[in-house]
Structures are given as C-alpha cells and as structure tokens.
Length: 389
Ligand code: BEZ
Image 1 (cartoon, rainbow, N blue to C red):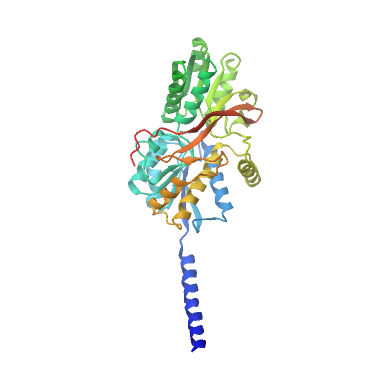
Image 2: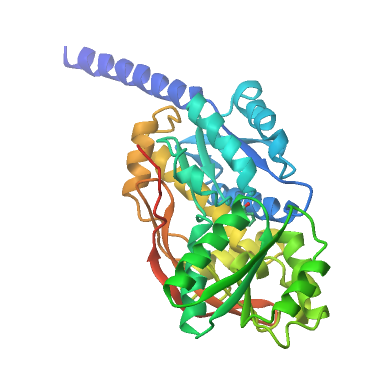
C-alpha cells in the first residue's frame, strides 16, 4: 500500500514536471519592436538607444519576464509624415509585444496615438514631447528619458542665477525645440531675466549663418539653444567659427554636447549645459555600466545609451511583475510606478503621468567629457499638464 502511494506520487510528480516544462517552453518569445532613426541627423542617437537596451537584455541572459527576447526594427528616419505607417508596421504586421521608440518628438506623438488606440505597450527612450506624458498619456505609455521642459527649465534657473538679463534662444522649429525653449524661458524670466529674441529654423536644417549674424547684431548677454545629433555638431562649430564663442556665452540643454564631442573637438570646450546625465557621475552603478558598454561596443556611452538601458530596465520591472504578460497593463503599470529605477544616471522614479522624476545635472565640457559641475535641479518633475489617467 505504502509502495503504491510512493509510485503514484512519483507518477504525479512526473506529470507536474512535464506540464511545467511544457509551460516554460510554451512561453513565446517576447517581440520587441524598435522604432528608431537609422538614417539622418539622429541616426547615432538611435544606435546608442538600441545598444543600451540590448546590453540590459544581455545582462539578464537574453530574457525579460521569463521570455526570450527577439527584435524587429523599423527606421523611422525622424520623419513625422511616415510615423503612423511605420508604427502600424510594428503593431499590425509584426504583432510586437512592446514598442521601444523613438528619438524625435514629432514621430513620438504619432506613436503615442497608435499605442493609445491599440493598447500596445510603448516605452519612449528619448523623445521629450510634452503631449506623450501630458494630454496623450495612457496606462500603457511610459518614458525612460525626460520631458523637453525638464533640461530647459533647469538651465533657465541656472542662467538667471548667473546674473544674465538678456538672452536670445535658437533652435529647430518643432516640439522639442519649442518646448525646451518654453521651459528655459519660464525659469529664466521667473528669475528676473528676459528672452529678447526667439530664433528658429525648420528641422533638420543646419544653415545657421543668417541667424548667427542676427545674434551678433542683437548682442545678448548669452544664448540658449536646443540642438542634438548631427545638427548640434554643426551648430557648435558654426558658433565658434562666427567668432561668437569668445564674446557671447552659449548654454544648452545637454543634447548640444552629448554623443557629439569627438566631432565638435575644441569648439565645444567649456560649454555649459543641463541634462539628466554626465560623463563622470560618482556612482558605482554608472561606473559598471560604462565599463560594460565600452567592453561590448568599443565606444563610450552617452545619455541616449542610458535611456535605452533604462527602457530595458522598466520593461524588466513591469514584465517580471506580470510573469511576462505584456497585455496585463494594469499589473505592469503598478510595478513600474512603485519602482525606484536603479539607473546609471542615479536612481529615479516615475511620475503619475509616467515621466522620470530625476536630478538634472549642470555639466561643463572638458576635453571629450561632459564633466559634472553640480546639480542644477534636484528631483525635477515635469508638470504633466493635461494628463488624465
Ligand atoms: C526630441 O525630438 O524630442 C529630441 C531629439 C533629440 C534629442 C532630444 C530630444
């Protein structure tokens, strides 16, 4: 009798083991759809995000939420006119579990609309458009980067404290430029300064000459700017070549000098910017991240790589809580909202509208690095205006 019980138990155990095994094998791969620029002025930013994300996944043994990860990728060309078609390729043709993208604010807004309508999980690893975590916010939409307002506002506070009174702004005419300047102006004018002229040119135009001549004629105390990627390289070089660097201090949101210093060379030396990352943060997490990134890619990481890595971390936190179920948006969101994300930038949390609440650093270019000067704004939260969730 006793022997039979033991035999039955062994058989039952074998069935359980087989079922568990089948379940583990039956977990389909997790399909991650990257929608990032692979061409154009933001191409290198897309590569850094992709690298950072894959590094995180590799550190987890290639699995997130217990599911092996596979990738599909669409080049969005930073072109808002193609954004709806491109994102629908990932949602409808490729049937991805999660979309990770993108860099350009105008493209990101079209992606947020499609994600909101389809319910597909979306993690934005760069684009700072206010709408994404404002009026278009949704339980399935998250950002691992920043809002355009954040570095602009932090730099505006610093510029006012430096005693500048008259500033000219110059940027690309689209959401990222407009919103960064708006943030800067809000803080700078609150601090007693005036933005005397707002100059702009269409994205991704880099014919700066006429606008630089206008800056020279206006003679402001300083200039504030948002440019990134290839456009930032050209702007910094043209500003110096026009002789303005010697006479009119140039400030920027930190994208002006992130991932660009090799190409900008001495023309970037001494530039002061504000951003949620710097190249020499005094934390072990960042030091380990930088070593692993350099070893894997034979490149130094930048802010975009960190944002890609943290998009991976956010996906991991959410999917570990839902045991890999990317359709359980409530469980996913609950876990990410409760988390303190252990980022190379320093720990951050996610606001009610799903944007990082984070320190914004003041940095100065020294050689090939954005060196930490201090904290421009501690635990800065985007106001998330218009978000109803
Ligand atoms: C944007 O379009 O939101 C953006 C692009 C590059 C760097 C930062 C922001």
